[in-house]
Image 1 (cartoon, rainbow, N blue to C red):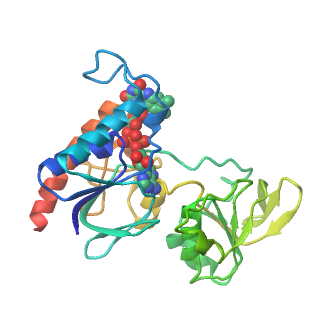
Image 2: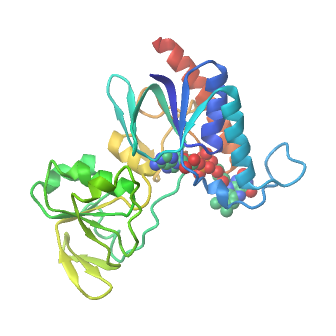
Image 3: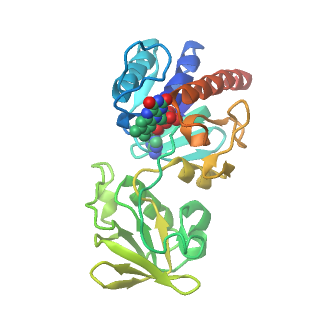
Length: 291
Ligand SMILES: Cc1cc2nc3c(=O)[nH]c(=O)nc-3n(C[C@H](O)[C@H](O)[C@H](O)COP(=O)(O)OP(=O)(O)OC[C@H]3O[C@@H](n4cnc5c(N)ncnc54)[C@H](O)[C@@H]3O)c2cc1C
C-alpha cells in the first residue's frame, strides 16, 4: 500500500511529491501528459530561470526530479476515488490504495458545447452516475463521451438500467486497448449532436442530420475525468466549480487534499507549487499520525 497517492503530475502534484518522497513516504504519482502547462511556449515569470523556459521542459524537469528522488509515476487516467478503510484510486488499468490522496488534477473541464446542455442540468443532464444513477432505474439513458471515462460511467449505470447508449458527438471513440472489450456492452452512437430538447425535463437528443433520439437522461463524461467529477462522486465540497480547501490544503474529507488550479486559485505555476508544498507538508503529518 502507498502512503500517498498524488493525482496529477503538473507543478502542484510534483511539488507535493518532492516533500512526501523526501520525508520517506511511499509516494505514487498518477497523471497524464495534458497539464495546461504544455500549452505555455515561454515562461518568464517563474523564479530561478534567467532565460525563458517552455512549459513542456519545466514539466519534464519536474518529473525527472521526482523520479530521481525515488517517486513512482504512472501514466494512467484516474476514473474515480473511493474511501473505504483507506483511499482507493481507480484508473483504467487498476486500483491503488493509499492512506492519503492529493488531487492536483488542474482545472481542465470537458469541452463540449451543445445547445440547451446548461438548461437541462439537474433536469435530465447529470455529471455524476454515483449521485444520480438511482433516479434512472429502468429508464433509457445516454452517456456523452468518447474515452475510457465514458465507458466506465456507462458500466456504473448497469445496475440501474440495461438501456444505455454512448454518444460520442461526432468523435471517433478513443477507448484504450484495456477497455475496448467493455465497449461491446453498449450501443454506440457517433452522430454529431446539435441540441438537447424537452419540456421541463430532457426528452430527446437532436442530431445535426435532423434525426432525434428519445431518452430520459444523459450523463456527461466527455474527455477525461476531471476534478469536478471526482468532487461530485466523493461529496467533496466545492466553490465556484473548484475544490474548497482550508489553509492546509485539506478538503472536507479527512486525508484528502487538493492543490493547484483545481482549487480555483490564481492560476500560476508559483501558486500551484506553493500549494503543493503546503499540501505535501500536511500530508506527511497526517500519514505519520496514522502509522
Ligand atoms: C497557454 C497557457 C500559458 C500559461 N503560461 C503561464 C506562465 O507563463 N506562467 C505561469 O505561472 N503560469 C502559466 N500558465 C498557468 C499554469 O499552466 C497553471 O497554473 C499550472 O500548470 C497549474 O498547475 P497544476 O499542477 O495545478 O495543474 P496542471 O499543470 O494542469 O496539471 C494537472 C495534472 O493532472 C493530471 N490529470 C487531470 N485529470 C486527470 C485524470 N483523470 N487522471 C490522471 N491525471 C489527470 C494532468 O494529466 C496533469 O498531469 C499558463 C497556462 C496556459 C493554459
